[in-house]
Length: 481
Image (cartoon, rainbow, N blue to C red):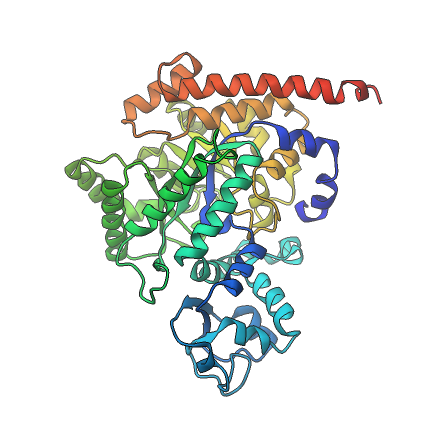
């Protein structure tokens, strides 16, 4: 159980060692579930003009836990919120905006401090919820999915988004991560600083993202940071016309910011969303449109994030492979399918494995019961990822929690096993746009190739050798203790 072990693991020498390890690339991370929630809450309270609204008054414990709430910038003066019924009162007018500072001060369970705690609880899965495995996957996903609209409504305002990105890049680089591919969709819209209306497309959001990546790379902390890109993500529950509209915006963003957009995916709970086979017509349309527009936007599909065996969700694995996905997100049920396992190896598809996420979202009870070692034993290429660390309650950003738990929990996975998965993360990174043939050739050639990946593998090998030397120097005298 991650939450029971978290405090102890962070105080160990093994934590210090794993934290220091050069970790290559982070290939599966939902950007809006990456930002430190306490920092996000502070930014909301400190940013001028942020208002809160709810669909109904929040009067009961159930209302506070489940009723939809959202945040947005408004130029309305703070005085307009004073003297009116707040969200916590019977007379609150549904969907009306209340200045966040006014609402926080009036919070009935402890004022502003209580408001902070309440808002944080709306954005994080509590340890207690993660323990109740007998409630099932759907129940925890209902809690999980309620967090995203709250977070996104705060995050997708330019000054807050910039501040959060700057902090995130510093944290990732400090943890040994040198490149990231974020999944994000900007589905709620993005607002410029001082603007009440959201942008009609995703161009400005991509511009801000690119500016902040370049800004960080120009700092001392970011001088060795290779960069970050976005896997454009669409909710799998959307109807075809909605999906096509988002696909058009994805292509538009790719044309305007080719170094930002690197792929496309469908996100949301697989069990409750549309299976990939149902999306084939729009996916074929998207492929055709990309060719017409002269852009390369490969598939990086979530598939097999489920407990099923032969149901529609499990069969997403078949369709992801047939549709030419370059990597598989989670692939939790892949180990049940020997033929698919062989196909994944043959087609050089990497599995983005997220052990702690799979545990908290009730696919497995602990790292000991995770299928990761079964995939490794069959020779499947795997990289370790953190998925949604802020919402899942990691409390720290980076890969150290997932690395530590895998290293400590799996007997056959030593430091060399972690190193192999880091090497995989670099080989399967989308540092630059490549055709399918170029992509596979680069993966095959590895460190012996002539492209960007080969250079970065060489750099990582040097970093890892220095890391191993540091372990010997730092802990060699304690080896026999």
